[in-house]
Amino acid sequence: MTMTIKTPLHAEAITGVILAGGRGSRMGGVDKGLQNFNGVPLALHTLMRLLPQVGEIMVNANRNLAAYEAFGAPVWPDSTSLGDYAGPLAGFITGLERCETPYLLTVPCDTPLFPSDLVARMADAMARENADFAVAAAREEDGQLRPQPVFCLMGVDMLESLARFTQSGGRKIDAWTAQHKTVIVPFNQPGDDTHSFFNANTLAELHQLESHQP
Image 1: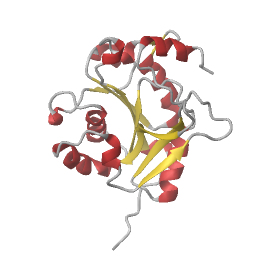
Image 2: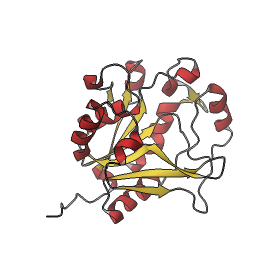
Image 3: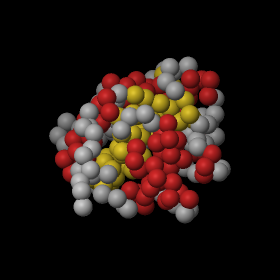
Image 4: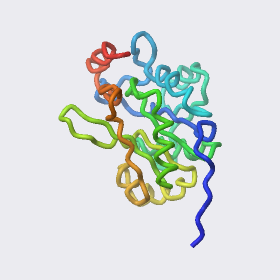
């Protein structure tokens, strides 16, 4: 069995996709990515936080496309291959289909305080373990360290695998990544912000997060 030589995992080889295609049902149906976080739309805040960490960036959105396009990055709706709303994996497929770099990193639009060294640490772990996926893990309120599967780094060669998984009815990210070699990257080291991976599912949670911004 020959070993595949992978492209070096540096920032320029990674495209970040901001997942803003959800229905915002727990926010009353509003477009979550356009809700303000300290005066800046969540998706734009996420874009500005991610931009220094990757080589390219795009937004996955299904509503208010002109508003997202005003942020200055390419905007792509969910791929039609999955039919009606299919959750985050629809955004993963869209990102993989549109990605022009060897690697893709997914981040949600509703977790505005993710680490400024997120990509570097995930890329280091993925390269070190020669893994197919790197998934972030964070300590939650109950003290347990849990994977955050929407923060996922992968090679673009995962598109075929994802197409097979979703065509067979799969919709859960962790059920898909479990089929491949995955490295879990803990963000619980001294100095890591305990609020880094808190996501805002409601407007009240969004306002609470504003007070924790470094």
